[in-house]
Image (cartoon, rainbow, N blue to C red):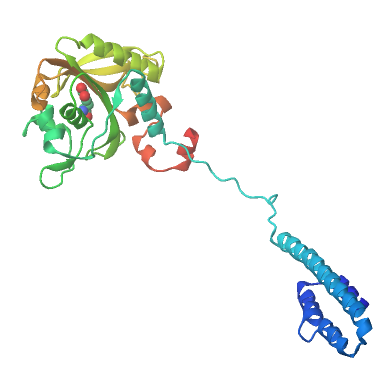
Length: 330
Ligand code: DAH
């Protein structure tokens, strides 16, 4: 029996343990053979013989179990060592993404108007003739439609040329008072230093009871907004024309490049045009069925703002996916 304890003790693998178990406890194992000897043993010795055998049986079983556990643990440790990952290994730094400068600028614009209690509205990029033109006081054959080179689909559907249709959609789906902005992409058939076929605008609209909204209100908020965006600049309003506003104005800021001295960027005028605005034309209110209201509206190009804030010369460079340029805004 003693040799079996030694065998168990020196077993080096789980396979060996299994072999020993079969050799000891199996049907043809040594224990079975020992118990078989009982028959030849004199009766008075039988009890002592059986007792000793049973003790061995129990002890061998315990020794096997303990050794098995020890070996299993060792095997696990070895497997873990073999599969270990060296976390100190060098790996190149992964680049982190960042918002595109146009989106950063858009966020800043939205942030200002949200702080002034304007809601943010959106509309579809595919519009119909009614919302993009007709309801905005741009009837068919109106010469102002030529200003906007439109991408047309069939059935009078088109890619919106400005965010102004969101004014119409919002007025038709709610009731005054309204304070809204509409940021989003717009499309025109244009491509040069200052025009791309897709760009972004933010539209603004405020509507309240008749006599409540004045040009002075519009002037105040836009001046405050432009100082928020560009810092200490001078702001001036120039009479202009838009079909959906009357009176209309274009708004200039003092040139951010030359501080109003006059340079190439501002064509030596000292001023940069940054947005269009006006008092909502009565025809627009009529088109949406509003009565006894007054309002102001404005619209601006987000890329133009981004270019002036970051001093970017060519609008097209914003859409080339050039990492050298974009990384500077991360
Ligand atoms: N929709 C005009 C454009 O795309 C911008 C604009 C001008 C919007 C005056 C307005 C506005 O709401 O009042 O050029």
